[in-house]
Length: 200
Image 1 (cartoon, rainbow, N blue to C red):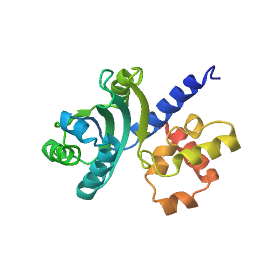
Image 2 (cartoon, rainbow, N blue to C red):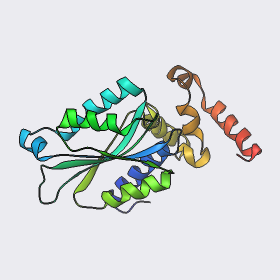
Image 3 (tube, rainbow, N blue to C red):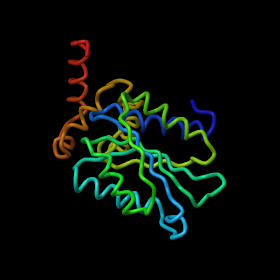
């Protein structure tokens, strides 16, 4: 049991991060900063990020993210985003051009990450800093509706599904919404039982 609201929030943060990070595509670090010009012009970094995401998706398709929002301790108006993203390969030069265009800012930093644990360590460095106290994630970080689905499962079965069916979110994420809406809990249990027999 959690002793404080802070512990509960932190547990929710890591649960949401790992569920999405362990599903599917390659992960990448992406750091997006502000500049003197963007600060002077009063350009909101989250508005810019939304525009950036739309452009990336128009050009490359799927782009899901989990991001920590931070600010400079001495300059609270100078925001930055530490992002873990997943999707197809995207040339760094094109991402740079997009961010400079939407945020009038310096070039972003992007790097491939080998595993979810490495990505978690990256975010952990910033989550415990006083300047980073908020996070955002895309609706499709796992799949749309997965938070409600998990809560419903816990309410009916007493615990979150990944504890009894570790691969359930990965399986559901790879289904279309119409397929996902039709599947029953009995079918999921049966699938997990088969996976366990195979030793998967």
